Length: 239
Ligand SMILES: [Zn+2]
Image (cartoon, rainbow, N blue to C red; front, side, top):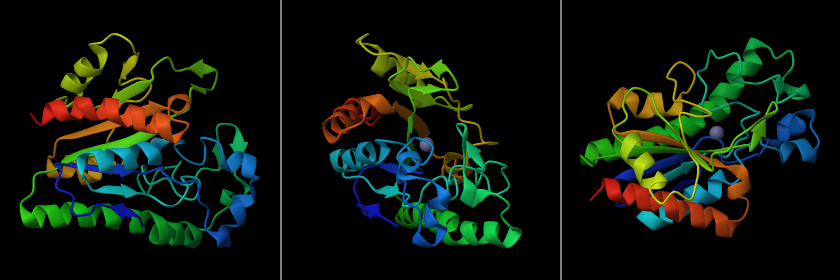
C-alpha cells in the first residue's frame, strides 16, 4: 500500500480511498472491458495526482488506496449494500454478481483492511508521537451523473463539525472565479462514508472531505494547479 512521506512534518494527513482503478489479476478485470475500467465507476479520476501534489507541497503523509472501488469501496461500511457494487452508473459488474459470504469476506480482508490498516498506522504513529493531525480525504467527482451536471469545480463535504469547512469554503470562494460546492453534490454522512468517520471523527480530529471535478484534474499540470489552490486555503488554517 503506497504511503508517501509517512513521517512528514505537516499537520495534514491526506488519504485517497479511490486513487486507483487497479483490479487484482485473480479477479480477471471483474469481467469488464478496459473502457469501463477507465471510467469514474472504477476510481476517482485525477484524485491520486492531486493527493501526491498535496503531499509534496506540505511534506505531509499521504495514503493512496491501490485497489479499485469496484473490487471493494474503501469509503463504505463493511455492511453497506454498495460495498461491492453489482451495478455502478448503469454498468453491470459481472465479477461482483452472486458473491458468496466467503468471497465478500476475502475481499474485505485482502483489500479493505489492508488499506485502512495503512491509514491507521499513520494515525497511530502520530498519536504515539503526540503530533497533532488534520485529516483530509481527497476524492474526485464525475462532471455529470444520472443526467445531473455538477457546476462545482471543487466541493467540500462536511457533517456537524464545520470548523474547517467554513473558512476553507470562504477562502476558495473569495476571488469569485470558481463555483465551490458546500455539501453538494455530497455531504459527509457517517452512516454512508467510512474513512473520515472511522479515522477522524472517532478521534475527534479536525477533518475535511473534498471532491475535485474530474474534468478539472485530468492531467498532471491541472492536478498540481488545483492542489496548489486547495493548499493555499489549507495553509490559511495553520497560520
Ligand atoms: Zn471517491
